[in-house]
Each structure stands twice: as C-alpha cells, then as structure tokens.
Image (cartoon, rainbow, N blue to C red; front, side):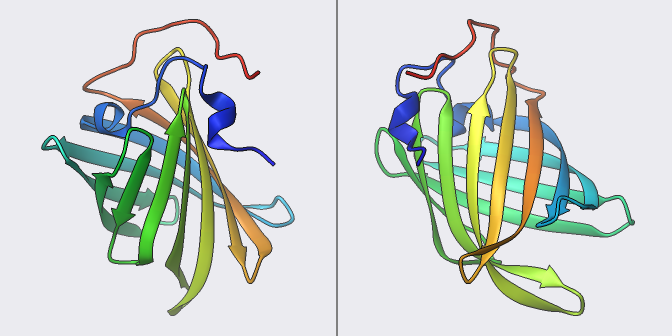
Length: 169
C-alpha cells in the first residue's frame, strides 16, 4: 500500500500553501466503478494564505450546466500535515505530504440526485516538474469503490518551475 513517506525524496516539493496561493484552474472527470465517464467539469480556485491558514474558494462548472461552490479552510498542522474543513465535509479532512506527493482523506456529503450520500474520498496528488498537479481520488461508500475523480491543476499565479522527473525509491 502506497504511503506519503514513499515520496520523501521526490521533487519538486509540493506545499499546498504555495501551490494554491493565487489563481488555480483545474479540469476533471468523474468515472463510475465500471470506468464509465459520468461527468466532466472545470474548477476555478482562488487561494489565500495568511501564514497559518489556506483558504480555497472553489467554483465548479459541470458539462451539464450545473455549478457549485466549495470553500476549504486548511490549517498547516506540521511540516508534513494538514487539516481541512468545508461545509460538505463531515468532520476534518486529513492530509500528509512528502516530496511531490500529498495524500488527502475525508468524508463528504456528496450531492446525489435530489439528496446527498455520505462517501469517503482518498485523494493522491502529485506535483509534476512542469507545474501541473495531478490528482486521483478514489470514492468509496462502506469501503466499496463507487467511482474515481481525476483532476489536473494548473496554478495561474505561481507556476512551479520545471525540474527533474520524480523518482520513487
């Protein structure tokens, strides 16, 4: 099983508070458990960092015309750890980051039809030398995978400089 510490020697180093400061855009898809593409979307994110807390204002635009908004409040709790809160997150999201990788886990009330359902997200983010941040999230309910979200982030304000490809040891 993959652990964040597996990536401790990889570059470029991912620091959420640096990467998401300013304007970031993302493109994403949601696939169901059978791999069928169910949704496509873009996200516009405005991030502010005050030295201890990162606030991400996310605006979602779905291919079917639906829109949504989520505001994350993320605290840096240690050299490698984060805690996050948002209105649709149940409890506190936990993040652990080493090298170019971040593992972010949380429970969420996900919109489903006219209601919501409780699901678990296990996100893995990897900062690439080009400045692109790739995110793959497995979505589960009662421990059974119901789908996956794939996102590609690009920071428009603070693009990361290119570097060498990360090596997993």
